[in-house]
Length: 240
Image (cartoon, rainbow, N blue to C red; front, side):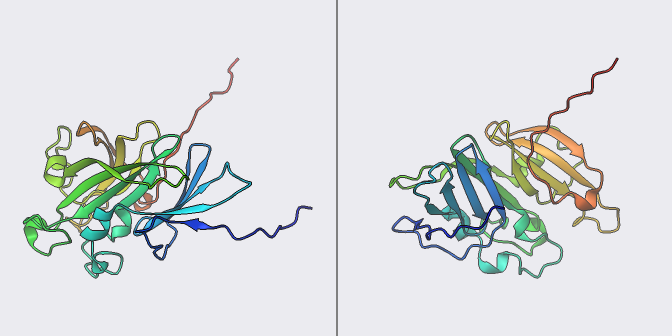
């Protein structure tokens, strides 16, 4: 029978300007066959090089600074507006290659352009989708987020193929495993018309070309908000 083995404490590396914020785990993400990330989409993530078993160490990486500045504390889960989804559905990180990650943030804004949720009717569902990419390493070199995508809600709603879908907040971003430029989102009419049965659609956006790739209405809509990226292969049984 295998037994637990007591290991030495693993050091946490951090850049000089980055203090380790309190982290609440939202997800554990494998990146290639080397890295593992423990992610708190509000503050940052811990990066571990799983290939270096002889000298294990963990590196702390904060979320993009622009995300931290644009949302104050009252814009997160404790926001008391029941007409809006909590912001835990609006940020996600995913693998974007063997040693790269992508962070997606759906940030609310007012019609005047200012950050943060608005109570005015015109801006109630206004948002901007932003993406950043980071190349990972465990060296002494600082890690940096590179902003590589941005779409305003008006751009999304005007896309060819979006006709008839709710002009509401996009939710639950998931980075495609096949193409990191492609991000899947959910959109629902739930906050627009509470008298109808819940309907949820999944859409695919290419953030680089700013195109709508696909739209699918989901069945089992009440369970739609907990989904994960996956690579599935179907191998039909041999028929005689």
